[in-house]
Length: 225
Image (cartoon, rainbow, N blue to C red; front, side):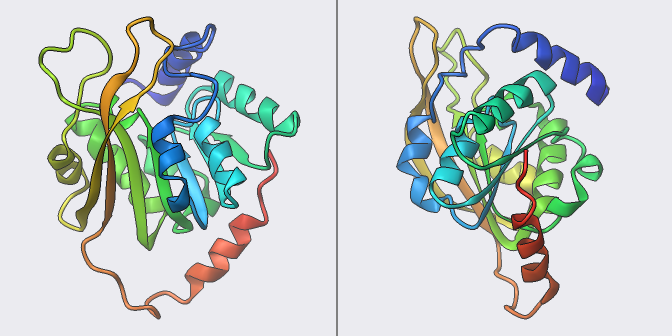
């Protein structure tokens, strides 16, 4: 198993240039879903931060996590330039225990722009464990994933909604799927994709954990880059 330092170094090399998924603006699929970016939003694999900054622009308390320190530095530079107020942290989303403690149980929404579809079955389950750690009991996930297509000869491997649900397990259900596209800077253009929305299989009682709102308020006060 590759450790987080090795993964971070690998992704830092990717950001020596401009990777094809870094289009310099939010993905249109997230612009279309912007009304769902409410409360506390945590982006997994935020890269240079465009989706996180979109959530902040929409009024969310927005936090972006990425294993690449180079990508996080670029995201923080956008905040320093006055784009929006958002928090960016270097973190390994495949290691739930290593995520910032103050994010536990506070996210109303986890978003992902083309990250989940890069992982194998084992890492998808590790990803799901991290999402469960940061989400509130009734939180949801919005995952922009490439669609499976055996005829496509380039780009990331696709993942089906059923595969996503299977990775998260029995406590989750599919809330919606929208066919869309994942834009790239490649001359080959965009990649057919799906916006996959997951939520808990059952909503917990409203009074299950009265400490959750207090923790959510605490993290919303800690948005400095």
